[in-house]
Image (cartoon, rainbow, N blue to C red; front, side):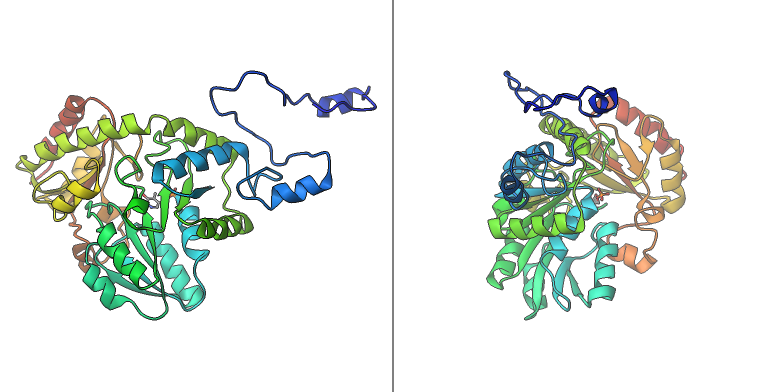
Length: 399
Ligand SMILES: *Cc1c(COP(=O)(O)O)cnc(C)c1O
């Protein structure tokens, strides 16, 4: 603490000016929560330097905060990125990744049937800024090459899609994009960096909803954008702080806390999903199972090379259609019906009545979703307890 030349005597002043420890001899083992919106300096020039530097010192927490920086650096390391920008939500991360790199009238090539929130954001950009969009399958580089126009600025992919777990051909697609000077952005939320690192496969920008696997405990909302290139990072940082995408230090700290067990959780949850997918595939009430571990999965071979593990998301189609899916999601007990994913607890939901409720029957079919599709976000519970719950719920379903 700097010495005050005139120590205050009034209690009202002393109550405001509590001691802030700055000279701690031992290093903290856990990242401290820098729950401060602003940093004080001894000279004015130091503030200017701190505010203008996305990688150095801290002046104001919307521009940078040590707890948030710790999270950004940890995630940049895991994704093999030059640097990362943490945000207040996954949608804030996607908005940052897109808007910082677009101007009115640009053209985008987007993987068909992406996350609903992203589809909504793109629809808004289309109306507001005359952004034009062409949809292509995530594993068709020829279709991408045919879709690229002179104003194409960005290719947008998802490593593993919702809810049918389609796997994007990131190397093949990113190579075509790069040849045409088009940036590749990949939403890696469903995989996490423990399963896939898109920047290693040619992507330029990776986004996550850290609300999901990275936080991992269904107790926070956050996002991150990771950049391979320093200039793209600086542009993204300037955009994110300008429009106010910044996370709170406490949410960043919770995310760091979750991140430390990400490898363990992913290992366990992916193994559980693989076992449940195999058992579901053998069940008479189940028509089809969507999980990259299964030999019949459309990108089974691609997944074996691109993904370290098949992942913890799976979905399955009940022969009894929407009625059966609703019976199943109401009959589970240990497993909860909730519209999120990536936590330690197993969650289920019915896409046709929730995430994809705005889809027409034709759009559902095009996305590979049937009225009876049920999604599972597999957690880290004991697999026999999960199967007992699933098996009893399947018994209550009308075929
Ligand atoms: C949840 C999710 C998002 C949005 O993240 P929020 O944290 O809810 O803003 C984006 N992409 C995918 C794949 C998601 O699952």
